[in-house]
Length: 113
Image 1 (cartoon, one colour):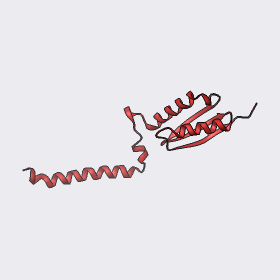
Image 2 (cartoon, rainbow, N blue to C red):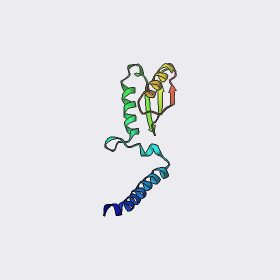
Image 3 (tube, helix red, strand yellow):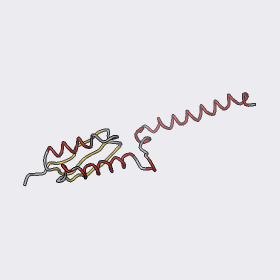
Image 4 (cartoon, rainbow, N blue to C red):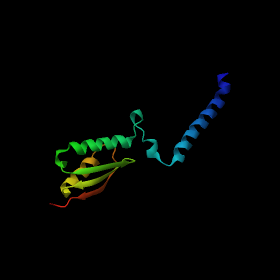
């Protein structure tokens, strides 16, 4: 009985697997598929929290004010920093976080007073 139904089982299995592949490739956005982390949290939310924590706790960045946005593992840093050294340090720190694909700079260097 089982051997007689084997071709039908393989056919059903092939159709199911094929439809999954078509759904994934039709979306055109592999990062969006992989963007779900633990407990429904998106990877971008998790990355943003790690970036915020790192920048907030680094003692060398005390006078900087950051606005952080993440999109598909690309971190965009905006805000004001006191000098170019702080800007570079922030960019390097964020670039070293696991899961960050790219860091984009939208920060401004504050005028010396």
